[in-house]
Image 1 (tube, rainbow, N blue to C red):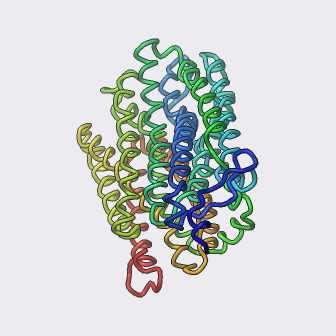
Image 2: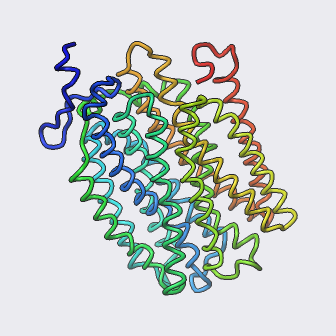
Image 3: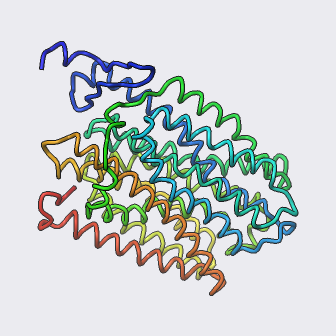
Length: 444
């Protein structure tokens, strides 16, 4: 390859399409590639951040649904489970959409779609509205859950393998901050205009959605090589590691998003004497998602340095310990200990989000050492599948809480289930990726 070819930066042609993208080439990366990738990462983060806020908006809106709405705690847990379910299902087609339409183009479309749930929630939530209507509004908010999968698949294609853990961690962490941000918005609305105006929460996001769509249109790019990927999902579905990583991602991201949806409700139900009003619970609900989001890039960076499997293994042990603390605090009715355990769960789920996502491109890079294109093709598809199944873990978390409260009037049964699942993830991570007999993938 000539020096001219090595030094030539990526060319944007036909509007915002890039036909030449070689992130693994150091000269190419230094001579323009890194700057283009960084620009796309920044706007991807903002759009994904707004998507997360819209997706998890119902974790806040249920705090506004007081006695005038006639909804019991089980009904509220269902309202938060529905958008989690829809969002998890949409992650598969959203991943396909990047290959079909291009990362920039699909970011514009997916950001614009967020206007539908935001506008509907802004004008239709009021006393007297039927529960079925609220379920539909909550389901429509699920479109925000798909943004993560398309964003991660897109950014995965922009960055070289040595920086994927950092880039995917930053992208996901910035997006995850949307969970904490919408809860801060909810706290602001509760404090300023009161619990009688839930539509204001959704209304605040309408201009931000417009800014996200416009920014994506002006500053992002499409990669032709990503557009031309074929049968990635089909081939990835045949890979055993796809399903193993999906299981692990249920434990990390599924926990993060599930607890993000449920935390405020659990506080109000388990400690009703302390959190007698929505605003009191809202003062605390943002803290866990905030810390979990901020620390996610740390998980990716630790995985880059120490290995994703090692970080994930230790992290699941820590998550089991955190869930055990929450269980103990629930039995002792100790709010301080309860908060310590729950915040630990958010923090370690955030670290695990970063480390597990780093494992995916590394696994397929090791399986395809002489074909980087094939490694990127499969890892991009697996990111979509694992992201969808992991998000479904958020549904399971909310259903576990709902059933536990229905059967036992306490969440203790749910905490026991979480501990058992984290223990399973510890065993799977060790058996497949850490033990010496694991072959070429040992120590991913």
